[in-house]
Image (cartoon, rainbow, N blue to C red; front, side, top):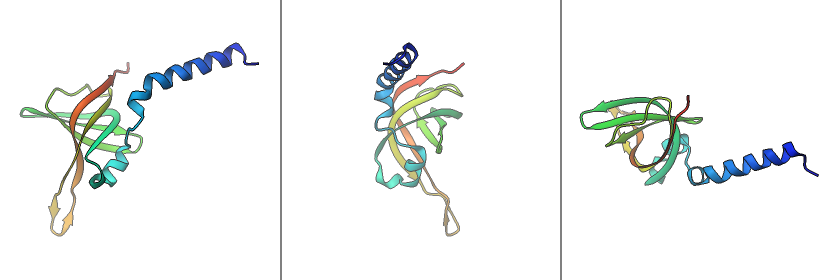
Length: 120
C-alpha cells in the first residue's frame, strides 16, 4: 500500500507531466537542429535566454539547452535574459565562407512563442 508521501509525489509528477506535455512533446534538442539543420523546416525548441541584441527593427537572441546554443531571429521584443522560452520556428542556415572553409551556422526564425517562464 502506498504511503501518503508516495501518493503526494505521484500526484505532483502526474500534474507536472500533464502541464508540461504541450511544450515537451516534439521538442527538438539544439544540438540535433544544428547538426542536422537540412532535415528540418520547422522545429519546436526550448531553452534559457543567454544573449539578446536589437538590430534595427529585428531582435536576435540566443537560447541554450543542455545540448548547445542557437540564435533566434524575432520581429518582436525578446524575453529577458535568464527566462526559459518554448518556441516554434523555421530553421535557416547562413553560410560564411572563409577561404575554402565554411564556418556557417544554423539559426531559427521565430514563428510562435509557446510559453515563457521567469525564474527568480
